[in-house]
Structure formats: C-alpha cells, structure tokens
Image 1 (spheres, rainbow, N blue to C red):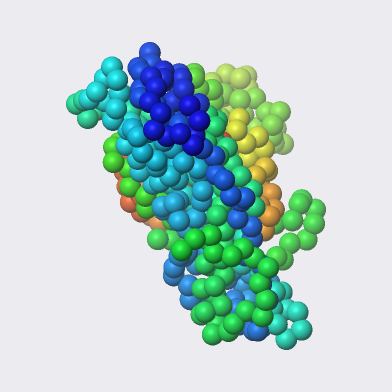
Image 2: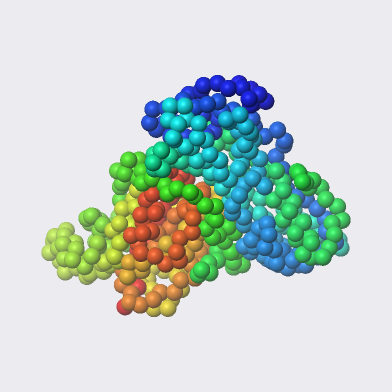
Length: 494
C-alpha cells in the first residue's frame, strides 16, 4: 500500500503496525493480532529553521520584553547583560512539529496529534490502542547589537515523547510502549519504528514575533521562515573545569516544571518483569570522603569504610537503621584486630533503604561520569543551611530531577530543570533552594538525569517517600531510557 492511497484496505499483521510507528504491545510483547490497514507518510516539507531577523531596538529592550511573554511559551530565564532569553513549552505537539500522516480506518490522522485511538482490532474487536504524543521544548532567543538595531536569532530544542497503551475490553492496560526522540531547529528525529518528526518553524517564529510585539518595535528584516500555515527556587551556576577560576554568573534551569499533557490511563507496573538484578546503589557521602583504597564493609542497605588516620580507626558510612549500627561496628573492630573504632555512621531516614534499591535498579550506565556532591568540603549540614550541589554531568543536555528525602520520610521535589550543556558546561552548581530543617539526622538526595522528563504528570511538592518511589518504579518499568542516578547521603545536625 502506498501512503498516497489511504483508502486501500489490507489485512496486515502487527509487525507492519510496528514499522509504521504505532509501537504497540505486539512489537516484542504478547503474540500479535491482525489489524486493519495502517499506512504512514513522512513529512513532505523541509524542517523549519531558526528565526533570524533584525529589529529596531537595543538588545536590553528586547530582553526586557522577552521577560513579559506568557504565550505560546513560558519564560524560564532572561539575561539582558549576556543577551539571551530562555523559554519552555510543554503540551500539544501538533501546532509546532510535523510527524507526517497516519492512514487508518479509511481516514488520515496527523502523526503529531496529541491523542489518537485505534479500535479496529480484527481478532480482538474490544481492544483499543491509545496513542499519545507530547512535546517539551526549550526555546532560546539571542540578541546581538548591530549598529542601531539588534539581530535576534531564535531557535529551539524539541523533546517528543510517544506513548501507546494497549487496552483490553475491561479497560485494563495490557501493554505500554514509550519512546522519546529529540532534535533541534532545522533537524529531524526518527522513532525506532520509522516515524519521522521535525519542527515546522512556528514555535521559533511565534516566539520571536511575540518579543517584537512586546517591545513595540518592527522588524528591519527577517531571514527566518515564513508562516507554515494559517515551588523552591532553583538556579544553576556554570563551573569551570577543575583547576580553572570560577566567577561565572548563575544560569537558571531552562526547562522546568511538570508537563501538563494528560494521560488517560495509569502505566502498568512492569518493573519486576523488566528490571535486571540490581547491584550496589550509586552512593556518595556528603559528610565524609573516605579514601578509595580503604576497606569497605557492605551489608543490605548499608555500606561503611574503615579509615585509619594517625593510628586511630573510624568507620564512615550509612546503615539501614540504628539497630544495624552494632553489627557494622563489630565487623570494623574485627578487621582492625580488636582496635577501638570511632562511630561515624549515619542511619538512613524512613524509606531510605527502598530509595537505595530503586537507585540501584536505575544505575549510571546511561550516563557514565555523572557525579554529585555538596558544594565545598564534605561536612555535616547545620539547621537552616541551604543545600547546594556540585554536579558533573557529561554528555548531552538532560532533565535534572532532585528529590530530597528528609528524616521524617517525606520527599521534597527540588526540580525538574532542563540543563543546557551549551550554556553551563559539564560541571555546575545546582542551588536547590532547600534549607535544612529539624529534627535532623540522616537524610538523602536522589538525583536523576534523563533525556525525557521523569514524570509525565506533576507530583506534589511534598509527598511520602513510598508514594514517590511507587510512581518512580512504574516509570522505570515502563521504559525510562537515557537515565542515570546518584544518591547523596547527608548528615544533618540535630
């Protein structure tokens, strides 16, 4: 069947459905069922390019105007001194990207539609395939003075998430497939099963025009594309490579907040079926830096290092609870020949062991080199002290999600933010905006770096750790790709 003949009717197997980009459960799940004909046509137009225009205004005037925008994008950051503004968009992809056309059931559907439903299963007529598309975009406008005018270039980075739920006649989700692609202005992205998506140029053009309108100016010239159709504050400060002086001004996270696109059905809990046996959790101690060559004691949800300094021994690390402290201390004395050992162990807060288990399942393989520590020297945090993280995150741009587990077993969300590696580099300080609160004791921070947002719907700013980890485990089980995690164990003053 050719894409320009959508009325042709054939009986195709589900493998053909996979090739056309629907990505249903049969693409590696239960035995396939026959479907009516589905065709796909790639975008016919060229990708939309960055908007490039000259405006009769000074860069500072345009940056001030950019700070007033509310549609179609939300302001994330403006910097009149450095001459740029950053915006974010989350929601319906159809106005701003072209993913071609799907042909099914005798009709045509834009493949970028936020929601589509296919219910014509030949062998299982009460089954439905619910397909959703969501766009998260980061738009940057740059201002450069040229004589009495300003050259303004507006471009965007696009992250498109496609989710397909297969639902049986009882309304139960029997399979879910989720895929994410990213591309920039002028580029394209391709899902694994063939669907091609690209910008149409409207997001860049509309954002640029809104800035011009807000500044009360008119373009001198435009080389950009023509219209294609009718909670706690966080900041990010770039850091230089080790050994070089800092002093760079702070940069705010570019793409933050939870996506608003609704999901009609909860994701199935596939974590047990798909997760591999977990190794040790990727943990860093915030209150001490034991030498890498020191002897390590490992127990379930416990890890401690025996450190010798000037003939005196201490044991540094964390344990599941205070009840596990004596066993670790006894083992440390045995390994030191019965010597006295100073106790520098921290008991994890309620839910800390489950957090470690979840972190171990995610791992760091998708982002080698991810490192998180407290800014400055390892130390005990005092009541009221602001938590600032020193982060090394090599590779491409990432969403950066921070969850703070306090001593009462509650999670406080200190993200997500979108980290623009081009702006801040591989090493930066993340100011969480969180101040340490009583009663103190052992606490922890879970940091997740991912290609796509960790959650597709918003989370409460503060919630029980069990509810958070349940939602996170379901996201992991549903296939959260390009993700790495670190856990930072804290010792806060009581």
